[in-house]
Every structure is written in structure tokens, then in C-alpha cells.
Amino acid sequence: MRLGFVLLFGVSVFGAFASPGTKAAGCVTHVKNFSDLAQLNAEIESGALNVTDLVQRQILVETDTKLYKLRDGQAMLDQPVPFRQILLPFAHTGVYLPKSIHLGHKLPKGHYKGFVILMPGIGTQISNAQNLFDIGSTLQKGKREPRLRVLPLLLDSTLGGMQFEAPAAWADHEHSVEVVRHVAAIASVLFPELRGQVWGRSQGGLIALEFAGSKHLETPRNISGVIAVNPPYPTQHMVEESIRLTEKCFNGDGAFDKGVILSFNHSWKVYREVTPHFHCLRRTSKVPALLLLGSEDGGYPQPDHLEVWKTFASHSDLRQTKVYQAGHNLWSRESGMEEIFTDVLSTSASFFEQSDARLTQILSAK
Image (cartoon, rainbow, N blue to C red; front, side, top):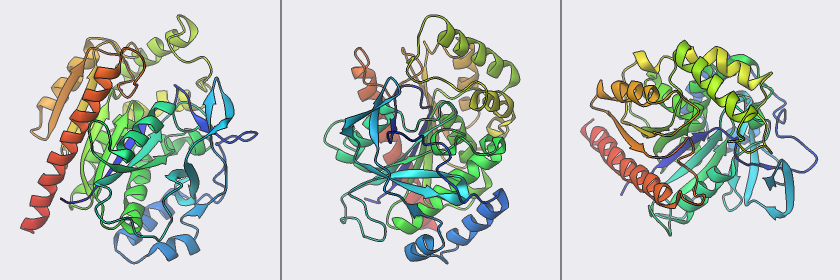
């Protein structure tokens, strides 16, 4: 079976990781501009660079930052996480790789079907939501459902975590797609035997759908499909309604974790400005796309939110939806969510394998 990788995205508002006494934001210091990133991506995709080149040119910068689980915004020093930080200066962000993975070393043959890139989206200065780490660990071990063993990578983008202090433009559709392209290109160098998908939750799901329709996938490469979990619908009306409902949750009934506060003066403002201008509604998907939606997601106007995404999916044979009687966070295994969590991962694993098989056929026919 062909190997692959998965890119996962989400909004980090439910718990996180960080090093004590520091903040994840602003840790990428050698920032380049957008044209530098686009040019570099083309160079990497051409096959001109190897792992040594990436390190020597500081396209990848390893750090010794210690990471810990967070509770109510505080680092739990007795609970380190098995990840290490690698900066991506050209993308004004960084990734977290499992400590067991060493740059330039080959992976055990057949050990992974792919790897997972987890990316918190717009929301906080703190990186990497706890439930995303849990999913990454589940997929890495492959011992429980869905038994799809993949290698987790955690990517900060969309003005969250390490990218929190990036210029606001880096959250728009064009920059967000270029950052995803950057990680996919680097993955092709670090792990040339792997290929995979883009999975995203909330704003990350919208980025995944945007990437599915981008020109970068017109030529089949190493991305076989995307999954979007409860993405915002990118029209002005729906975004304004989403903001109103979400702020009501924060200021009213406490539906969100009070230990992780949205930065309304920066990321939240940017979300309001850029989200209505994403282009995925007007673009043709180049790869299969699966939308996983919660009928009880109180962050969006329901049932309108479900219906508009169902209509979107119906316009292409490459798109499909599945609806759960649940809220925004379908990647949570909290009490009462165990069955849904298992089904979401099993559905995602099946989609991964089917889409990967489709890409195999396409590449074989060339």
C-alpha cells in the first residue's frame, strides 16, 4: 500500500501546549515576505533541495524549546509533550515534530501510512490544542480505531501560536494556501516515500477547502484529498453571524474554556476581515473533499450553516458530507463524545484510503 500523510488544522481554543515563561508567538524571527515563500516553494517542489539544504539555508530551524501541556493557561511542568519545535522562517511559523523523528533520517519501512500535520488556526497566542495532540497520538500509534498509523506534525498558521504576530495578510486565502503548500513541499523532501491529505477543523477546514481548489493541485503531487470539520462559511453574512454567536458564548454561558481567551483585538479582527474573501465556493475541487459537520455547532447559525455546506458539496462528485448530532469540536473525546470521536476518525481513515487509491490510479495512468 502506498504511504501518505495528513495535514490537520484546527482552532486552538480548548487547551494547549507551551514552554513556561515564554509565549509561542513571535518565536519566528527571520521573517521573509510572501514572494520569497512562493519562490522557495517552487524551488523545493522542483526537487532542487535536499534535507541538508533546508537546514543550511535556515528553511528549517530546530530549537530546544521544552513543551508542556497547559491547563487554564498554565504550563504543567510535570507533563511534557513528546514533541520538539522546528521553525519555518519563510512561512513566519513553525511545526512540532515527534521527538522520535530526526531530520535526514529515514523512517522505518512500512511503519507509517502517512503523517499528520496539526495546525491551530485563528484564536490564541498559545499553540496546539490538547485534543489535536490526542488525535495525533492516536493516529501515530495506530492501535485503536481507525488503525491508520500516521506520523503527526503540528503546524501553527492563520495567526495562531507561532504565527500569532505575523502580518494580518498572512491569514488571507492566498497566504494561508501558500503556507500549506510550503509544508507539503517540505514533507516531500523530509519524507519522500509519503503522500497524504489536508485535514482541517474550523478555520483550518476552510483553508483545507481553499487548498483543494488551488492551482497547486492541478498537477497531481503528494496530496490525495482534504477533510474540513465544521469550517466557517465564507460569506459576509455568515461570518458576522458566526462572530456574534461565538462572542456570545465567550461572554455569556461559558461554553468555551475560560483558560484560553480569544484575542479579539488581533486574530479575531483579522478573522472577520479575511474569511469572507476566501475563494473555495467559486473554485473546482482538484482532489476529493469530505465535510464533517455538527448539527449542534452553536458557533454558526443553524440549520443554515449545514444547508449551505450541503449545497456546496452537491455541486461536485468529488465532495461529500457527513453530519453528526454534535457541536463544533468533533475531534474531542470528552465524556459523551467517545462514539462520535471514534466514528469521525474511522470515517476519516476510510476517506484517506479511498482518496489515496484514487491518486494511485491517476499517477499510474500518466
